[in-house]
Amino acid sequence: MTALVLALLAGALVGLALGSLGAGGSILTVPALVYLLGFSPAAATTASLVIVIVTSVTALVAHARRGAVRWRAGLLFAAAGLLPAAGAGALSARVPEALLTLMFAALAALAAVQMLRRRTPRVAGRASAARAAGAGAGLGAVTGFLGVGGGFLAVPALVTVLAVPMSAAVGTSLLVIVANALVALAARAHSAAGLDWALIMPFLATAVLGAWDGRRLAAKVSAAALQRVFGAVLLAVAATMSVTAFR
Image 1 (tube, rainbow, N blue to C red):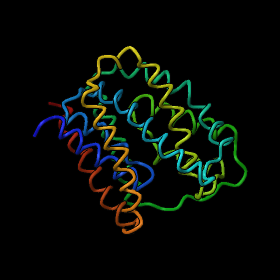
Image 2 (tube, helix red, strand yellow; image 1 turned 180 degrees about the horizontal axis):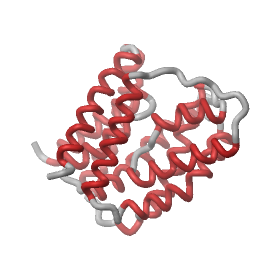
Image 3 (cartoon, rainbow, N blue to C red; image 1 turned 180 degrees about the vertical axis):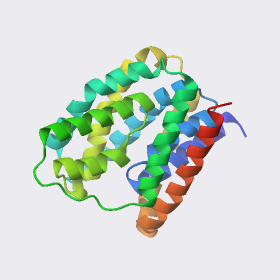
């Protein structure tokens, strides 16, 4: 199977996960780029930022049209993460690939556990400025360092820290993700030129198309079932990355 076909199939799978689950699907992007398309971990996390930005903007527009984005809360939350995202993005290129792989594996395992034990976050009472700044900074650092959107972290943080209702949490999280990913990508601009765009562009195209199919799938299959399947896939990904990090 050629690399182009693999890029198309992997992009479709990532898009399907993004569209059906709303948050967390982009964490499949880095493993797909590394194990299917032969990217190094550092290159994969940079390429993932490009894919996260485009797919998140596409989804953000759809949420904004429905009025499901809290712009003020999202921008304030994102502002706290911009500097950490830039710093983590620059630092990531200097981290040994084995360590970067292990850290990503840990994040994938965390996402899997959250998916398998999914509970509706409790809405906060009065938001604390310090907690909001800390949560925003933490999410920015994760996005910058590992090249993932972090929606599975952003959604509960927005609900529990800033009292954003669940009906607007996913849309608002996309705003935060786009802001953080743009800053993180800017910090890695020197390495973006060397990426294999001939594989990234078809991956991106099918990811966007797959997201639309994912939304239709979500209407036919229960969210709990989708989360269990996705959680199991992420656990397998985390285990594989942990093993290969030492080779």
